[in-house]
Length: 232
Image (cartoon, rainbow, N blue to C red; front, side, top):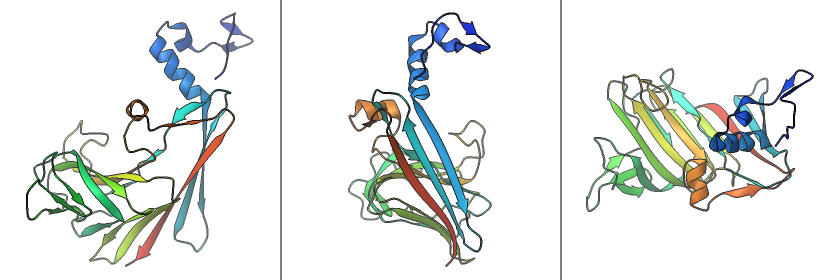
């Protein structure tokens, strides 16, 4: 990360205020952010329905820095409705945020969530309509590197594909709470794929679980996500 010496201001360049604050936690967070440089490129080709998004993170320092990838592509009410179905090569499922439909102890194999000991379960691949209040988050151990949302009535779909080893873990989040202060998006009607490189969400939590792989000094890591609109 960048190094500063006295004076506090020199030729118009000033030491960041956080480094003068005496708050060691904030200083450590600043050092972490300053050590990583993120670049993004988005490519849309004429006569192609695909948008290709590429991100590269570079450790500009000399010391290894732990990190994890996490992308959260959202699909909202402009396309989303109760006729939509989520397709993905999912595996084992577990509940991260319970709802009226299932408890935190529910589990199963995509797309069916079952309560312990139950014969039947909830088909989580079917999107709830916007007039149903819900806020649910389900973790899915991916068995592939793609996902899609299809509107059966309109015959349209939105597909996502990524590198085979980029995001082995995903969570499917559905929300329609009609209230301010809801997690991240207020009262929006939305579903989201929370794609990530570690099973545990959150950098400190994944670090504590021993799941992070440090990025060596002067090294880079890249991921690619392709979004495609298709007719079903």
